[in-house]
Amino acid sequence: MNQSQIAELAEQLSRGTISLDHFLRELGRPKTADLGDVQLDLDRSRRCGFPEVVFGEGKSLATIERIFERLIAEGADVLATRIAAEPAAALLERFPRGNYNLIARTFRIAVEMESPNTGGLVAVVAAGTTDLPVAEEAVETARWMGAAVTLVADVGVAGPQRLLDHLDEIRRADAVVVVAGMEGALPSMVGGHVAAPVIAVPTSVGYGANFGGLAALLSMLNSCAANVSVVNIDAGFKGGYVAGLIARRKGREA
Image 1 (tube, helix red, strand yellow):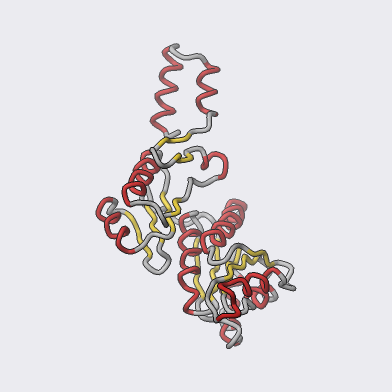
Image 2: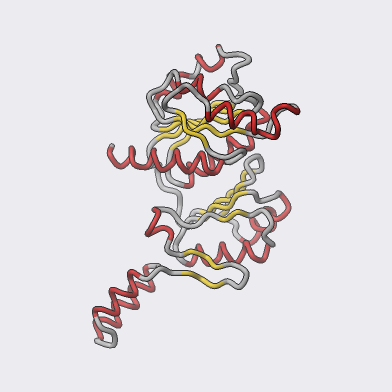
């Protein structure tokens, strides 16, 4: 429920046209917008702290536009993932304040001018340049959640000295997202050097025995580093979201 709807309810309460019980029930009622082919969860911010995120793959441009329009009407900052370049160009014409990341395939719209970061610090570490699409998705997600983000790219275990050059930067983060394909060894290496939670994101990058990211996933699940947890294959959004939640709490404490 946005501010104008709450104000309207409050005015009805003050006029005596609705009861206090009705007012409180309306404020607490889960809200869903029926957009035809989409049932948009408008109550997610209240329950979970952030609005519903749009998974763009497989959705028509018209559907995505309707979702964006309703989220903006509710005063929610928009994040959509897996948006291809062609529909993104059309979305930028319709929503000129949008920000499209071609590598990440994410589309963000800030309802108001973006404020200074107040949600802590997230470090996103990518093993190889080919892992950047997934890493950038994590970056964009954490930024949407209000975190400051630092990206460290191409520091995989084939040249471990490259990671050491960035440890001071990574150690400052409240949460670390590590994105890697192939054998998926980098999260364990990072986990052994930092005190923060490490969210490992396996990617489908690799040759045949990588099995589309399954080898990296299993390697990460078997990590000996106690601070490593794992999300799904190519799930940069999930990694960035978990890191953003952690960083947000740390930011509030600070």
